[in-house]
Length: 180
Image (cartoon, rainbow, N blue to C red; front, side, top):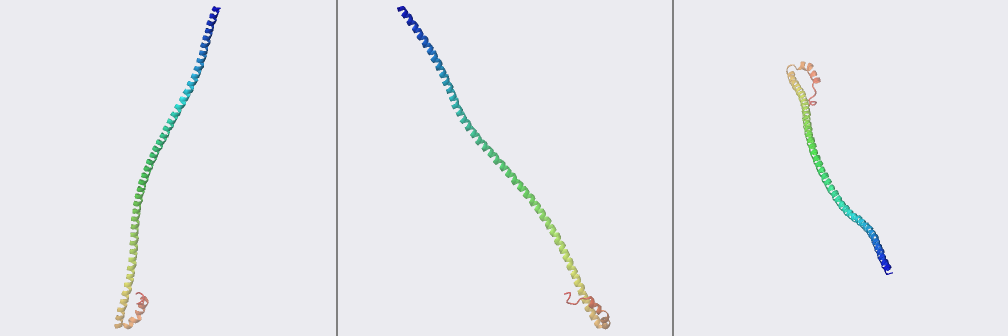
């Protein structure tokens, strides 16, 4: 009995050891599964946290790049505007110079034309005045000649001259007040 008891106790200890080992293996497997799950969760959490940080960093960089691009594009647009404005000013000055030269040429042409027209008008007026002076001179000379003729006739040939020449002179010569 004592031996049986010893054997029983030995078997019991062996069973307890096997059970302990089995429970240890079971606990270890559960622990490892839990640990693996915990590690996976931690990995996912750390990856999420790192991703979030990286995303924020990326968004900051993206915002900075957008600001830089906007500044650069604004600078380029201002530069283009300045160049365009300068080109417009140069074109305006060039057109102004062209128009000024055209205006001066036109003014010179108009002045020349006016000069020729005034010359023509003055020549025409001069001819009219000259013709009028010739008519006046002719009438005056005719009047003087008629006075001389009257004096001449009054002397020697008064009767014959009065009958033949004076009627002709009265019809051909205007009266003294008409040509004055």
